[in-house]
Length: 338
Image (tube, rainbow, N blue to C red; front, side, top):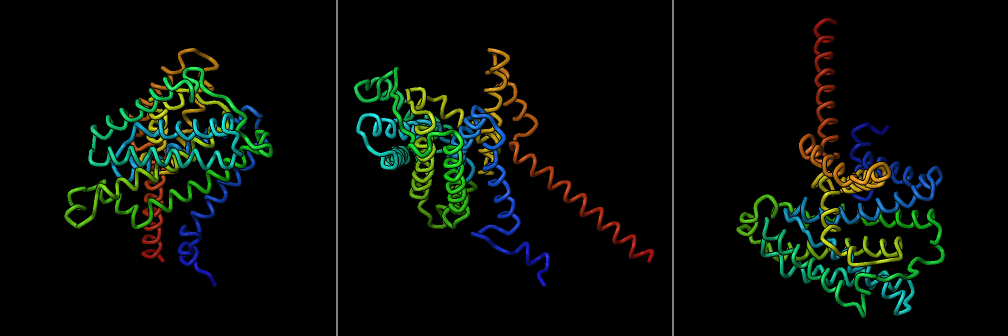
């Protein structure tokens, strides 16, 4: 007979049985959304998944290595540019264009990493910002290739994914696989090393770890996942412009990560959903939607600095402790009276 303890200890793909069940329920519920939502709402849900991947890629560095990057929006945009250019101008099939975009983003991330990993704190932040601005300047001025301010347009999406629902399911499947890969990465021995660097870089050096090399690999891997998000965005939008690689793109990704909860990884999807929903709902009623978004973010920082997921986790932990204490007192009372 299976005991509750054995059920909790059951592992599925490295996850506890309970965690795997919750993940499966979330994915199934998300897959059912196109059946009840309008095409416009399905488009917003698709955007949430794409930017959730971008937020998770930033969280690999910020939440687990202690390095917050303002250059991931540029890495994301490079992938988008390459995918659109490869399909619209080079005539490559969407699958090859997708792979080329991810490769280009990973290469740019590796270059960024080589330059940035020996810095930390505000210097890392400013250096990645400057590197991202270089990419933005290239996309803005290299009009022969990028189209300059006019951007580029192309039919990127494969014929089989032309409907909103079909594309949403494809993005959901990609997001599930990528999210699982990132989760495994941060929980691997290498991911634990990144956490050690975040907690005490000097101690990790004294233990013999090559800190710059580990940060470089972490930066490159996170750039790879940002590239996947950028390639999916190219297929979603069929258009790219300098705004795709602008600083605002990086800032939005960081805000999504922070709103969901730094270091929670999956909180990026919650943060992306909150910010994208606010942008689209509030902008329908007022032109000052950015002010409302700013006030909302300030309130989150004041009342839930650990993010939405972090706050919910703290509340559930507190309630669990209270329930356990309640049952313990009831047990003692019944033992003393019977």
